[in-house]
Image (cartoon, rainbow, N blue to C red):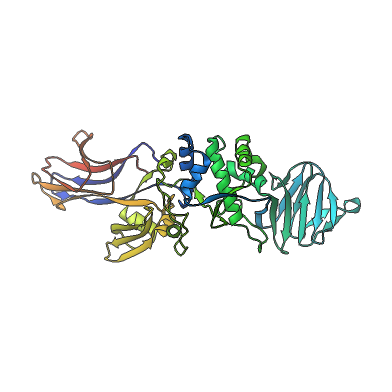
Length: 436
């Protein structure tokens, strides 16, 4: 996030009488993109759509070598809640509820709190009845609600005796009506929404879990699914314009991962998730229109060498940093040389998690300000040494006798200035747009 402010990163004070000169180091983190970066970049697709690309061309770019295919009607099961103590199920019109033995009873309109006993006021005179371990709710004239959110299809409440879970079962394309506008803003160009619809449909098919009690999660763990409230006419149009369309590879529906912003180049699947086998259509490709993303570039964020080491659990302050990158420019590993003499190597993913970075495409730069002597006598000269590594835009400033600061130079490489302080003075390194 760029804040448009200037922050004092490090400073050195030089006294004109016998005194001390202090040094400091700041580590600067910058990066690109948001998410794993595999497959389609949603912001990149938006950019391509603005430049006149149709959804077929967009998808062929992000998933090279795939073909378009069609599938028939499919139902999916979305786990809306897992391991809850209680859930609420409701409908504005009368419902039907079916137990595990397929016995169906009517339930008046309303909202019902349901715990592990699955007890509901059905039957003669509205007496309570337990539905065992399974209750399937269906409402023909209005959407059902689960914990206040509306959904098409049916809702199944499952009990393990201590907790309850809720599954929404519905047709794939009805499900996509709640996914497409949740994943890509509904005001985006139609081609971008159509690309999102085909990618989301293909992903859902590739992730079906017939041996489990659900297929998909409604979060970024799979795809964000907002139910009825998320639907919009423009995204509905994209879903129905691409009805049944999927991407295929070697006769199978492709696993079409996607993420928000690639930072300018997508990531190969085996690099994003070490141990994964390479997949030909999930390789790294250029993504020039990702520049539309507000997260195409992020940072800089500043920390002292001690602060950053503490956040990473390194034990002592960082002296220097080096990184290894993969084809998609993400960081595979970071090697930290510490002031204690130890050398510690961490994966890029581990560093990104510890620092709460948006992606593994990041850099750790260095700004260093020091003086040649720790004791400075009146009238003697002292060297002010500055260093900038993997940092852009840093400036060296000096404080005048009036307290005002003036810029001496922009720091783009190691440099040395020789000064003869006749009065107390101070130097500082500044980096515009920095957040600590």
